[in-house]
Image (cartoon, rainbow, N blue to C red; front, side, top):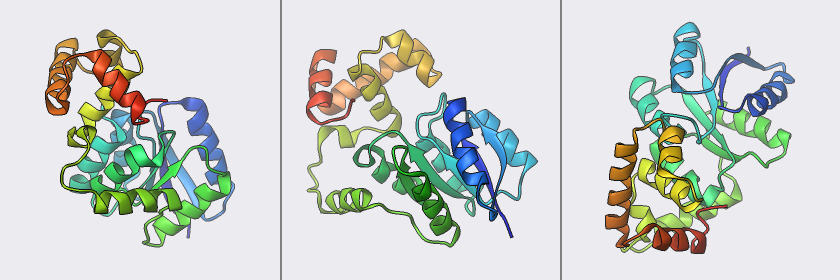
Length: 212
């Protein structure tokens, strides 16, 4: 019996590569592809038999973490494997908190993707040694957490974009928000992190490895 999968990634070339890897295995059937949350909703309506999503974090509009939270309410039986370019120590813990069943870096070998899919479909979590370490460190972290850990998922995403040199209008476009809303996020980030300007945020993000 084949496992029905939808692949969600906003980069068509990357998405096609993932689909090709998955379709090489007879027990797997990719029933649809999606580039954002709207397309995913359409695909899920067309394929209610879907058992697993292989999904990126960095999606336009609603990102993967936000989608995970929605799916936890709307489709609690649907498993989600996050496949992302972001390092495990930045997003894996957030992804598992939001309901992900596994997290895999896009730099991993193709056979790791198949291993992750099989493990998740069999009802287990897929955790790499890097993620295990991040989870342990998170559990053992003192209550006085690092400033960026106080941010919401959307605020954290905004921080990374700001620190990478994106203009407010670029951030608004990337997140499918209004510039005014991004300004509100910026103000919240500065307040929560106890900083006064973008230069301080950028310095902090670089120092803590939050930007590439």
